Length: 373
Ligand code: V47
Ligand code: SF4
Image 1 (cartoon, rainbow, N blue to C red):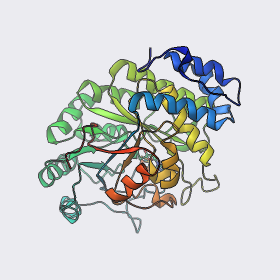
Image 2 (image 1 turned 120 degrees about the vertical axis):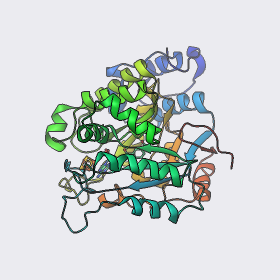
Image 3 (image 1 turned 90 degrees about the vertical axis):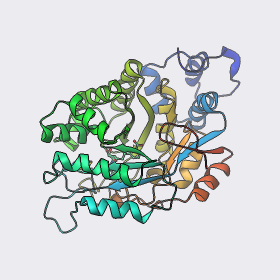
Image 4 (image 1 turned 90 degrees about the horizontal axis):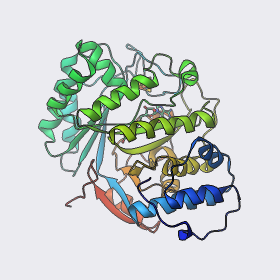
């Protein structure tokens, strides 16, 4: 049984794609969708019909509310041992625009915005062999010292695996140490597409999907919530996408520790895959809607405006998304790969995007508690 469930007559709608009627009955009665339903939804050209199903679920869960957070991104290093083929952000040590922030640099970055009501710090970086285990601890301590009232959402499962390696600790011990230093939530990156085939071709050095899931499970057991992502629009197949969503759903059944899912649209500029064209609006909306329909045990689906643009993110609110992520201030990872969206949004811009799409803006913290602004 899903988080919602109603009578079969709850939705009157004429679908152009007749195969969607069967899925509609399942959605309305709260029956879990299977692998074949996922494939049928991805293959359907009835984008409005697919969106209507997702919007039905979205409205059952959140009504007209659309969430966002006042957050700041902090990328502490772009030096990375993995050098995934889809990444325009990473550099080898010694390259001219390679960087690693000292703890003092981190402090100054935070101080630059100290008068802004930042409620969440999103902190991620590459796997940089010149940073020690103590650096990560000091990084968290410093952020907590400068911003005691903000939540630290930091280090993807890929980084946690790496930090455990340099510290010579188990994953459980590493998470306990990071938590003690101020870590409160894990971002959803690094999952990419959970397929060995894609991993071999695009990110052979990165941890595999079993390890990613294992680290997420350990984080949830330690009482940390996390997000989950899927990078789409490169060489993945529809089967691999649906399989990815089902793997996340299975772990969520076990732990309940995921907060939001964020589909990430691949941007190819300045990467080794620059021949791959941008994702289309059609596919971006499909991924939002599919996530809402397949991930029946996830509370929130984010339309990450940085990747799909502010304008499409607004439309995504009617295709299953209930969250626009955050104000961000300065985004690097996607902009280095050619994103045309703004680098940050003000609270007023965010609220305008939401209210002009017919929704009620709700400023939240990392745990979806409401703002006291
Ligand atoms: O793990 C890297 C992806 C991720 C590219 O948890 C790219 O709240 C598109 O995970 N084109 C990092 N995507 C971003 C991320 C995230 C963002 C916002 C919120 C949250 C959250 C998490 O970005 C990486 C990778 O999957 N990525 N390069 C690229 N060229
Ligand atoms: Fe490194 Fe992450 Fe970029 Fe891969 S996506 S090269 S792990 S920074």
